[in-house]
Length: 340
Ligand code: NDP
Image (cartoon, rainbow, N blue to C red; front, side, top):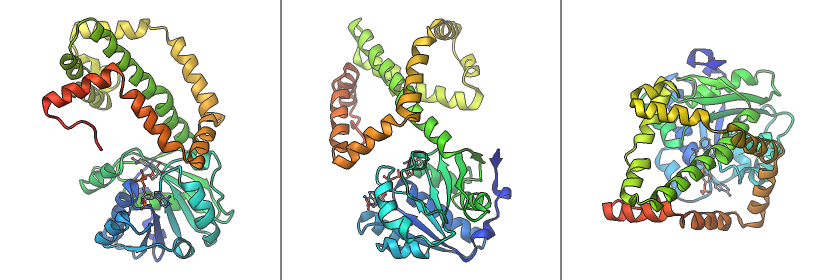
């Protein structure tokens, strides 16, 4: 099912207090969209932001919101609570400060299924839990709302204490602009499986394939400049993915030459998929469904080693032929290297 603006009754939020916990990527975008929707639909409701006293809180102030550091008090007033702090931070924060202060019948909104699927949040029985999970980074959630384009978003009800959690989920989704382009009915389980699978199986395969391709072609005399431009700097792969979204994953191949069409299709169809399939299945079943990844990740977060582990992975990845070669090319092109 896909739900649009007309399916959502925003008046359900009239007179309510909407609390955004966290004013980061998603928090800022969703709060700004919500305020605009309330204004546009002439719905009277109060928006509150809870964030530590720092630059995020300053930004919320500058954007004209009321900001509090009193999590428990803000929670006790709220009818709708957007949980928009990083996933690894949510269990500790929610279980100590938010859950115990919630009023009966309030609704928790999650933007990712992870902590609900793995049952890491102690949500009171009297509360609703709904998911509105944008398939976009925060800046696009905002810019695509402003330009009236909307964005894809997964929506679901995970716990219905009041009997109208579905209607509330749609009203909340409308508030953040998620029903403009159509909110897709989903579940915390589905969102988690797809998201983690992409991150732990699909993209690692792509990263590994690019890294190995680079190494092999470099060893066969291809230059860093040619490789970096061909593989991604030209933005050709990004354009191909755009065409996939416009015309279809396979059908977009009509834009390629006959040499390319034959090479790509024949190459793909003659690959032995069973090697991928058995590895993919292991990741899905063991790491994701049985929770091995979540347990390891939580352990690192709790012991304070997560940031160091990620730093080490960046360090190792930075030593591959691709990473070393691209750094040289970026420097020669006078292109700043790295986002941070
Ligand atoms: P951010 O990393 O941008 O969140 C930062 C916010 O969390 C800031 O307000 C920060 O405030 C606060 N925060 C961080 N640590 C703590 C802490 N220990 N205690 C209290 N507040 C803290 O998060 P995102 O917006 O990226 O993610 C929020 C949710 O949205 C997650 O569930 C994520 O999975 C989901 N999501 C994210 C997407 C994305 O593109 N980023 C896309 C779709 C969903 P301060 O530092 O001041 O404490």
